[in-house]
Structure formats: structure tokens, C-alpha cells
Amino acid sequence: MSNIEQTLSIIKPDAVERNLENEIKQVFKEKGFQIIKAKKIKIEKSEAESFYKVHETKPFYNDLCAYLSSGPIIVMVLEKENAVLGNRELMGATNPKDAEDGTIRKKYGISIDKNSVHGSDSIENAKIEINFFFKD
Ligand code: IDP
Ligand code: MG
Image (cartoon, rainbow, N blue to C red):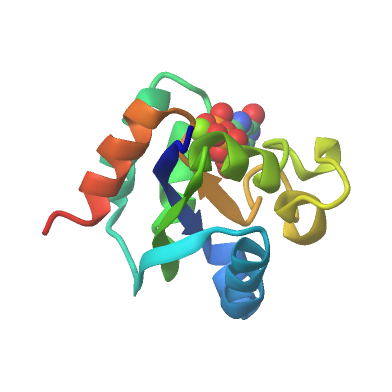
């Protein structure tokens, strides 16, 4: 049975700054993801705070929001069979040090905060996050 899903992916400021946009998009395409929508934007800190609201009680929340709003990012809607989990697997562990070979964070991530990509963690959150950046 086909189970086509969409998920939200973000290429974070550390990767955009290193001109990795096209290289990372190519990784997604090679793994069978269709890039349905993509735009380069810079968000305000208040928007990052809203996007990452689930983390508001964490000690790293302020730094995280400052970071995501520190420079241009690429927000994308990716589509594929089981896209949400597939993207999480392709991204690798949150801390690049723990990420497996072949994952985006292993290859491009610099540190736990500068880990190059964001990906939705559930189908429910994918819908919320896609709507956050792409309200048509
Ligand atoms: P995820 O991006 O793998 O889903 P989350 O736990 O949702 O990881 O955390 C969101 C983002 O917050 C991470 O991608 C990372 O950049 C940052 N982060 C998570 N844990 C820490 C931490 O312990 N210190 C600093 N930054 C963190
Ligand atoms: Mg997360």
C-alpha cells in the first residue's frame, strides 16, 4: 500500500553559510525525496520562538532560536513514501557526533546546535510545520 507523506525540512544557517544548499538538496533527491516547495528566507527571532515552542522550557531554547534566526535558511516540503521517518533517518542523530555514516548530520553537521538540518518528527508536526512556513 502506498503511503506518500510530506515533511518539513530546513537547511539551517550553518549549512546555507557554507553554500551546501544544492549539495544537500541533491542528497534528498538521490534518496527519492521530491522537493515540492523550497524557499530561502530569513526569519525573525520571534518566529523561531514560535516554531520551536515545544522546546521553550529547555535550557538551549534561547540559543536555538537566536541561531535559527541568525542567517538565511532554506525551508522545504519533501514528499516520499514514509517521508517523515525516512527524513529523520537520512538526517541522523541530533548530535552529529552520534550520527551514523551516510547521514546528513554526520557528513555536514558541525555541533549539536549547528547540525545543518531540521526535520519534522511526526506526521502531525509535519502538517503544523509545513503550514507554519507555507500558508498559501
Ligand atoms: P532534532 O532537531 O533532532 O529533532 P530536537 O531535540 O527537536 O532535535 O532539538 C531541536 C534542535 O535544538 C536540535 O536540532 C539542535 O540544534 C538543538 N538542540 C537539541 N538539544 C540540544 C542541546 O542539548 N544543546 C544545544 N542545542 C540542542
Ligand atoms: Mg525536533
